[in-house]
Amino acid sequence: MALSADDVIRMLDLVPLPGEGGYFRETYRSPLTLPAVVLPRAYRSKRVAGTAIYYLLTPDSFSAMHRLRGDEVYHFYLGDPVEMLQLREDGTGVVLAIGSDIAHGMAPQLVVPGGVWQGARVAAGGRFALLGTTMAPGFDGRDFVLGDRAELVRRYPAHAALIAALTRAAG
Image (cartoon, rainbow, N blue to C red; front, side, top):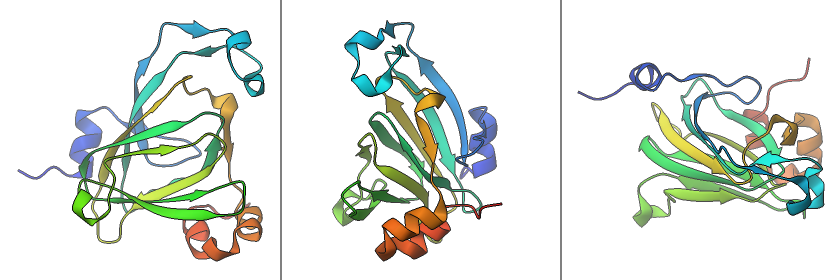
């Protein structure tokens, strides 16, 4: 029996991820706390040592362009490939494929460096993709910034079409 997105959502108790999109469930939050004095100055306050989530995308959802203060590591688990846009502070950008077909340039694990804009969607024709992400220090909502379509298109015009697909209209 082939699994559907609805099957995976039900079996893993995933819920919609507000703001960013897709479906998720936090699976790990470290009991250890890192004091601000051991973190880079940009953090300004304590953080948990690490977090992990399941993250599912469907053709009807996407990971809206956003950036995080820290590095985020993506892990591909099952389903169809994912197309990810990363936009760097120096004005460059790259489109990467997350998936299991390493012979065709896909990466089953991919790092988004802290401060890099990122957005993702299931590759054309796909039904769903189940991923995981881990962060150390752990995810904290104070470190999440949702991208503004107009501003990102202005800064990265070469990627305007994909930015439009990975953002929601203002208003």
